[in-house]
Length: 357
Ligand code: NAD
Image 1 (cartoon, rainbow, N blue to C red):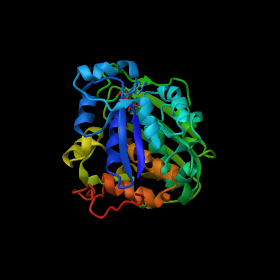
Image 2 (cartoon, helix red, strand yellow):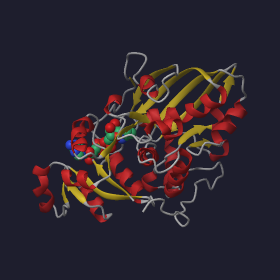
Image 3 (cartoon, rainbow, N blue to C red):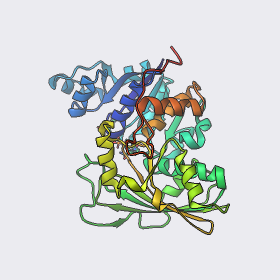
């Protein structure tokens, strides 16, 4: 079993912990929290051992009725791999702690690319992380772009990607973020930083990105224009994308006209926290003009990187191939939506066997 510790139990960390706990070849050693807030109580109820991320604050946990298993150093020492899910920039401060215990580490997309040996997306460059001691799982937007660029790149070749990213202002719980009533070019300078981030996965890709922020918390929406190297039909592209396990092509009959209905769909289907791990591409939007492909996709920022963190663990420990890991992660989490109105893949734990005891 791969022993996994999670440092930072917020939007990403709590989802990563639950995903790790569903894997037959992994176990959650514990989660590190800075304070005994509602998430600490939930972690306790879910049976995770809780460690003090800031040892001086340990007494606060006892006062709040949350039992601690120890301090962060003990968690790092006990884990084979730490998944750092702390806010942007804090991961860089934690790096030396993980190194001092020779514990491998996965960082998130808020960190600079040079924090780790490789930037990672399971569909696009799984093998870049094989045997690495440190990996950065790229951001929600870069994950969404990488997943859709990979099959287009392989099937048709790409001359140029141009993407406008309409980004949510904050996550639902981030009530200090905005805008509340505005539409912000963000960053105002063009191109945005997203293109260079995608190039950490596809170094030879020509890509320009423009970013905006809007008063929404639900999802990001990308407007993509990809100049392909081959002449193709929209139907061919649609079929190609429908074959991707982490892309959901929304069929016209579903009546899903935006991020709000996508989130309702996920909640109605009983998805944990209403999560949508897949890129959601509107089938009607897939259009071809000459060699230019156009489409819209929605990205659930809180959850699309979760399966990628699980696959990164298997890549780093060299315990599965890309295809094996993606299949196992998809099956255990329930990733995959078909075009049918029933829609959501059954989560099947019955046939899952441990690959490493
Ligand atoms: P978050 O603020 O929701 O959660 C971070 C958690 O870490 C909080 O519980 C916070 O209290 C805790 N924390 C703060 N300082 C800490 C420390 N020193 N040690 C341990 N814990 C500490 O943040 P998030 O949205 O989960 O983001 C985490 C990382 O994931 C960032 O790099 C972010 O860029 C990246 N990411 C976020 C999203 C998203 O949309 N939320 C998507 C993809 C990637």
